[in-house]
Every structure is written in C-alpha cells, then in structure tokens.
Image (cartoon, rainbow, N blue to C red):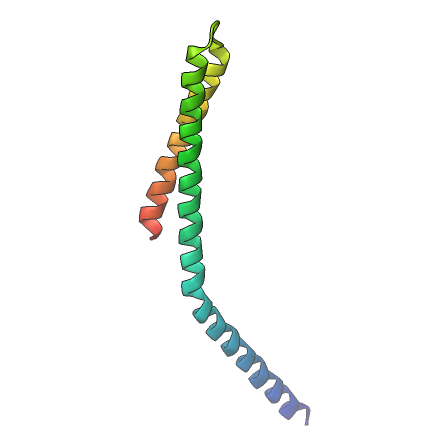
Length: 96
C-alpha cells in the first residue's frame, strides 16, 4: 500500500511540475516584453538626467560668480549618465 501511495505522490508531483512549466511557458513572453519596456523606461530616465545635467552646467556657467565645483560635479554626473546610457543601449540591442 505504501508503494502505491508513493507512486501516486510521484505522479502528483510530476503533474504539478508540468503545470508549473506550462505556466512559466505562458508567462515568459510577457515577462520578456515587460523587461524590454522597463529597460526602455530606464533609457528615457537616463536621457532625461543627461538633459538636466546639461541645463545645470549651462545655468552654472551663466552665474556670477560662477561655481566651479558645481560645474565640475554636473559635468562628472553628465559623463557618468552618458556612459550608463551607452551601456543600457548596448544591453538593449543585445537582449532585444
């Protein structure tokens, strides 16, 4: 009797695994699209940040007396964001 019970349990576990695999297969395309859209959103956020840093740079250059530290920090942040953008776009091409 315990042998039958063990066999029934194994079949039940196998059915559960099949159901999970089927569910994962159904969800995969949606998860991929979501990941693609999330990456697109991140690219837009980085581009916006670059534009904001450029505005900070131009504004700081026009101030009298101008704040060199603020200009350098904004340039540094802009450069960092431009590298992030390049990497995000490379990743986007690679994955999608």
